Length: 197
Image 1: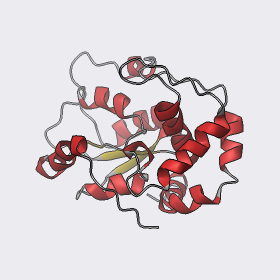
Image 2: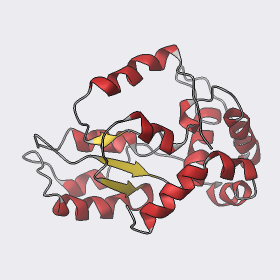
Image 3: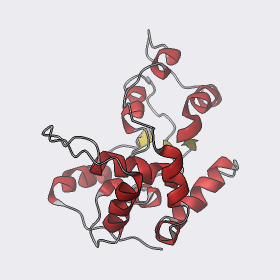
């Protein structure tokens, strides 16, 4: 399924900046450890580093987006308050039916296609810590003086409530719309976890 998203005014600058950037260290995909990778980017000391991206299970990523958009407090502090996983998921499905959905729900492959750079390695969100240590050795990553790679794993950068995760995932697996909308994401994710990329 090919997804075409309309760019909103507040996202235009961010998207335009992609074409003006030098080869990036991390390809940013919303809901895929963006804050975590921000810390890493600030800690790497290389003139021509390899380019990475973090890929996540499409179900857990969609569920995380549902919680952030429909359950967590708004930026102005206004509580949204919804906790029922079925209602949250159905709200998310309504979002992907829109011509112009919130970017949190955009397929990961759509973000990947925004950049015109080869990606040297894909991390999986679920095993990011272990993979980062292995890959930093493989690519001979140079860290800034004083950086302790182990310390970053202990940081609770973006805490989330996981109370309803299991029942939410089970409910999502029965929704054909999610499989169709994220078909390319499922294919990419399976390739990554099977070490084909």
